[in-house]
Length: 67
Image (cartoon, rainbow, N blue to C red; front, top):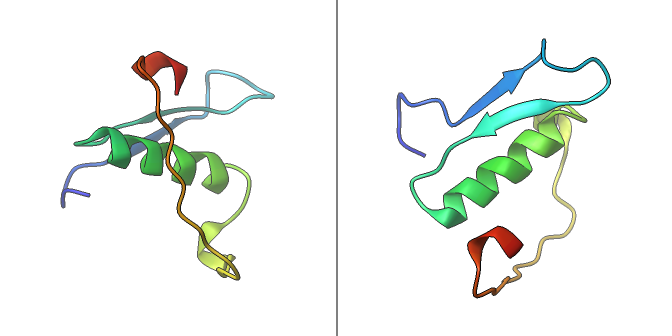
């Protein structure tokens, strides 16, 4: 992430039961990482979550909107 630029912004006053957020990234990979971080942090305090297992995966699509 680029220092000084906020990549995740939560919109708390848009919906009562749902979560709304805006994510940014300098690449599609960073955009997806920030989206995953925003989604998970809306459900739990991610600073308290410890990694037990991790894995890499790759998605491919001819169209960006189908990823």
